[in-house]
Each structure stands twice: as C-alpha cells, then as structure tokens.
Image (cartoon, rainbow, N blue to C red; front, side, top):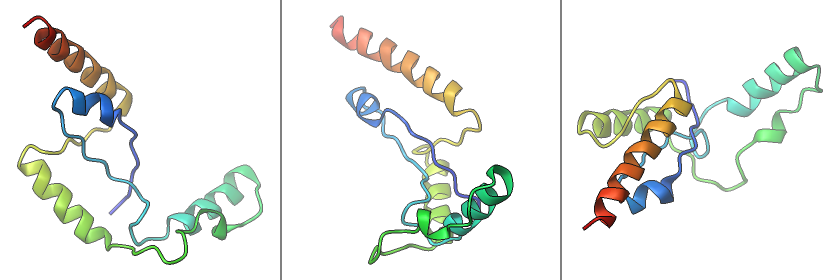
Length: 107
C-alpha cells in the first residue's frame, strides 16, 4: 500500500457539515523515512539521514493494512473520497461549501 498525504481545509468543510477523511503516513508502520532519505540522497545529493523523518519515540504505529481496510470500508459507505488531483478536489469542495453555506445563510 502506498501512503499519501493530502491536506484539506477540515474546519471549513466541517462548518458545512462535510466530514473529511485523510490518509497520512504519520502513525502508520512503514519505511517512509528510509525511502525518503534514499530518494533525497539520490535526487538532491543530500546526505543519507533516515532519522530525519522518523516517527516520534513511543508513538503507537498501526499497520497499513488496517488503515487501508478501514479507508476502503468508509469509501464504500460514501464517507471517504479518493482523488489523484487534490488541487481540483479542494477547488470543488470550496465551490460546494460556498454554495451550501450561501444556501443556508439565505434561510
């Protein structure tokens, strides 16, 4: 499973009654720090430093399969969205939110 982070205006969406689900690498078991350090070394010429992106000491990490299963369940229930174009998704959410908030404020 590939882990991806998307930042969404959750507070803005919540005011419009929209629940937002995020998949974030933080708190999920994996090799993100090691892989990132390897890529930064190869592509940017930086020193190999996998400790730079390590999880904080003592953090309880969950298995990626658990996160994936939960996300798929929520997606099938219409409670989560998958997008490969986060900027377009955010623009759509803002338009829908503005429309919804405008409709609600007219009442």
